[in-house]
Image 1 (cartoon, rainbow, N blue to C red):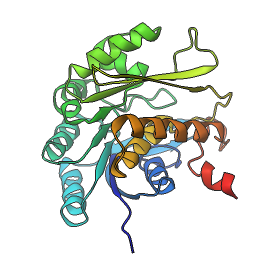
Image 2 (image 1 turned 180 degrees about the vertical axis):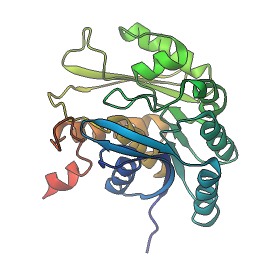
Image 3 (image 1 turned 90 degrees about the vertical axis):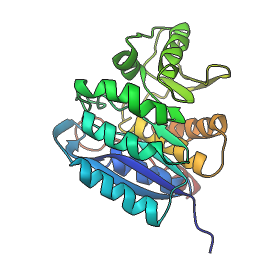
Amino acid sequence: MQIPPRVLTVAGSDSGGGAGIQADLKTMLALGTHGMSVLTAVTAQNSLGVQGAWELPAEAVRVQFRSVVDDIGVEAVKTGMLSSPELVETVAGLLAGLPVPVVVDPVGVSKHGDALLAATALDAVRTQLLPTATVATPNLDEVAQLTGVRVEDESGMRRAATAILEFGPRWALIKGGHLTAGHGDTAVDLLTDGTEEHWLRAPRHDNRHTHGTGCTLASAIAAQLAKGDTVPQAVAAAKEYVTGAIAAGFRLGAGIGPVDHGWRLRRED
């Protein structure tokens, strides 16, 4: 029996199942990989927002990581919610010696506007976590948080990518989903390593149920990298997958529902 590619997510839990570890594992399964997890925090979260968050001790994160990596092994890693300087530094140290692709999603704020990264952790993200990344995937709010660059158009996305690359990731994927000026019907992202530029465009779907979009995209990139794709191939495939998941997003609860991680399975039915 062939073993599926192994992908590890290092992230927080979303009790509502739309984002975080839950979204990561669903995405990894949907894309034909074996997902594994290192839990960094527990959140009480639903369609209305985050009602509470509890960070795990750094030692618990370290032991989970070593338990998985030393026995099962990994072929790609994705990081998500790392709320404190101590957690960022711990995870960065663990990743520094790992010879596999790493996708860093520098989660700063939830879909509902709840802060998920302490301001005191920003410097550790810049100087320790981002240098470990094969691909960093900030959205426009996270770009502003990390670099001070505020993006209003495509030239701003180039400036943002340059600023992110200065922190050391091999590639920067600037997610322009919140960019509306001149892009009303199109969601545009920029992937670059400072030399190559890849503009990824997809139809913007009129669907407010988009909880988990960032986690899903980063996990999809990691899954594709584990399967052997190049970075541009992985990002293009992940963009296609998340666009379909957004289009199929559904209402749960009274607020913002999740993207549909199993949309391809349901389409095949």
